[in-house]
Length: 308
Image (tube, rainbow, N blue to C red; front, side, top):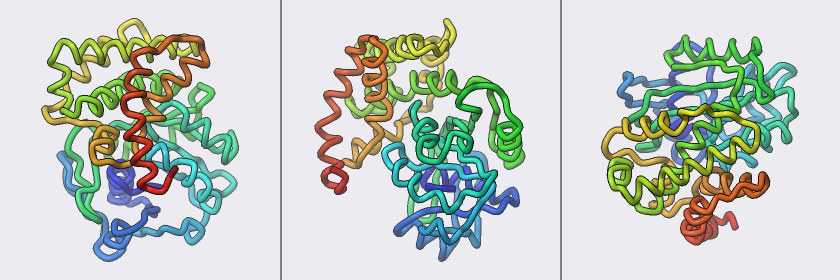
């Protein structure tokens, strides 16, 4: 499990609790805490404590594995991919589960087309303290599939392993539609939430901010259609129903990062809609507005972190 934060820590702990041999690639105080006291998960689905837990910041010490689940933030993906080759054997499979629609293509360019599946994850979880993951909302779920479409044995096998570990997992023949459907949700809610700095229940209930949210979603649907990805006529209704079902106080990980002054996934979410829309000749003025408003703080956060 490359990345042991809220997402990777949760799913990795579930796999380890089910008896699978899991190694967490982590860093800093979080890594030290996992090595000393194991990895704890507090969850509405039941708490677990993996102790001892195998954890390292040196992938070459692990050696080839059957599968690599990559759960770092989207902006951390290039560095994660560059450190990944020592983990890969002849038949190893890599599953990036970053937000956005570009992670699988990025991984295929770095590691080879034949190694990579596409995937999307749904969960609200974060590092509450070093060595402690707190899952506080959204049914944990992973959907995965072949980037070029079609069902494969390896996708079904990995989904089965996750399901047996208590994770709602599914192999799909159209992972592109799944990724774009999630982007319709996550890009708009993250950007609007980061801009207005209140939880989803606050901005979804006010007509002006709800209209902004819907307009941003419509642009993402249009970009997907221009790129040949059909999301279905009810995608907006389904997405808004999901937004309306979120518990009070819900914020996205990108919103929390922006509000804390940390580097965020702005470029992989709202920025991707703008960038891919421009490539497809689809106007995205609402997403351009949201991106432009958030970009100065993003640049400042990256400079403070030594990333720019």
